[in-house]
Amino acid sequence: MTEFNDRVIAEFRAQDGQVGAWGTNLVLIHHRGARSGTERVNPAMSLRDGDSWLVVGSAMGAPRDPAWTINLRAHPDVEIEAVVDGALAAVPVRAFELAGKEREAAFARFVEMAPAFGRYQSKAPRLLPVIRLARRAESRSDGPH
Image 1 (cartoon, rainbow, N blue to C red):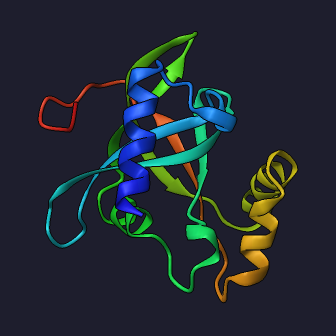
Image 2: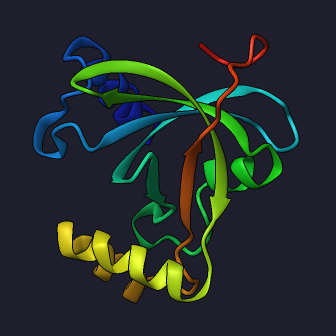
């Protein structure tokens, strides 16, 4: 998956956030390893929700949550690269995992946009996490850029 992610990240940056069939719905999540503290970047399909972005930790229906969701639980203050007002921007955000009806409604939006998410949920022996990346007012000088 790393090679695939590296290609997606390179295309995202080279094309100002426009990546193939995903259009501008992709974000790059900068996060730190829960145990290692190593800085990492992962692309994720997103949906705008007001001034926030929603992402799903699907891992294509794998048995376990993707590492980036575990890292967001441990270190929720992160930065994303996203298209904002037509331009690529670095945005400080805080990750909040959704639950209950709020999670169900958000997940339904993903399935409507990309039916594969429904297949991933059917395949997975876990509830796929839906995470809100809510814009933070302050900028972190010690975070990824």
